[in-house]
Image (cartoon, rainbow, N blue to C red; front, side, top):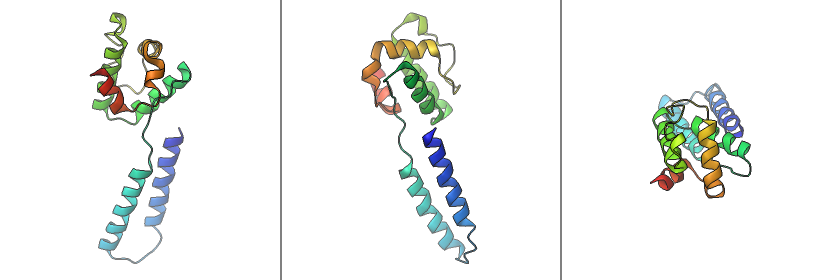
Length: 130
């Protein structure tokens, strides 16, 4: 939630900055906005998994999924399914496209890997799954 608030706030500031009535040329505005956009990209923190509790894990996993494209959400779901190693979750109830977290899959992964997933990024999870 904090990441969403930060991104929204930064976006609003950039939008307001573009409406300041400045009479810069279009090229100057484009250059300034390009620099601001790269600053925003650097300011957005990477989403990591938190495993202090199962609820915290589910929440951080939901934030991670929300930060990904549809294709990457599917890759994450497949990686988590592989990491779970449980035949019951080999066919998750969602196809990975949804922003919600499959509770059974999340619980199995959390119970098996708990601390090993703490602080891991999307890329880290894919590497772990091989």
